[in-house]
Length: 408
Image (cartoon, rainbow, N blue to C red; front, top):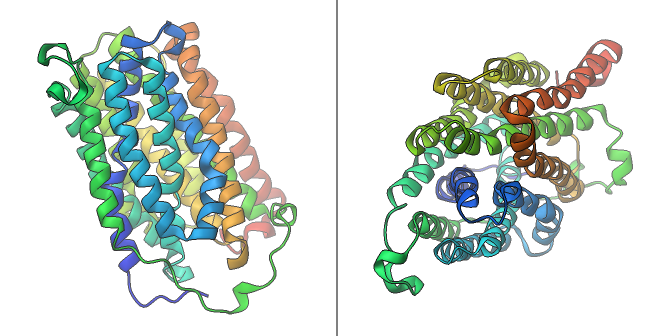
């Protein structure tokens, strides 16, 4: 049973996430562009971004289980310190045109994201059951700050010369080296804010019954829908977003500023709906919000298909972001209703592993699909990812209407 006297956890983790969440947008914006400059072959251009997602998938289970043992605060601090170091490694890799070192840094950033994803569960544990959706949506608002701050720092520091810090003459330091030094500094800010975080306090109660086997827990229709919604949201979003900077900047020859604007708008669209999506869930129901997210992603594919101009890229990526918000928030809200307190780390670990394993596959395939089939190929191959979720919703709502009564 949760003790909910204040919103200290929400405030602290929200502020920390404002700085910490800048790392993924910087990697997404620059990973493919840097890869195009220093990768040994075109097939590896988007590998750094894909490895960030792979790092998240590989660390999802260890992160949850580690924090079950040492506490969330220690896990958050250790991961954030490691990510700040990864920023320095990335800067060194760029400055020395070492592609594989840069890939290592990206993987480490992904590992950090696995820990940061646990912020939402820490917040959910700090409020009452009826406030979970609103609290998580408020936490996700930190992404708005990160969407401005990350690309802005990356852009403004792209030509900053770190001088002898990296062992180069002033004129020899490649562009974007300073961007990753800036990322390291932002993560350091997040680390210091996390020093004020306190682990959630639990007391015994009806939620502390004996944990059930995972296979028993997975038989719940609610849990299946929760995982499916998040998997579809992350996979389609990652497939398209990873391809966008390379498609725009390298293939379609849009400027870096235009590319950064589209990515920044997309990231804003991922988090601005959190101003109202938590309230929409309370009013319309989780299933309806998940269905709305699915429809928005379908419209995103329709608009993005063809020979996209700048406005098509922008509109498609904005709709993609809003759709992701609805699917991810809806899935997370459902997930918190499916486990007892004694089962939470186990279920959270499984959920995040499945989500980021599929996202990793989408990211890994994004660059190859883009270069072999083109932008339209990426759009078309996103359709089969959406269909299973639609079929699951139809089955649970119309064929088993009672299975979701408690959450619909």
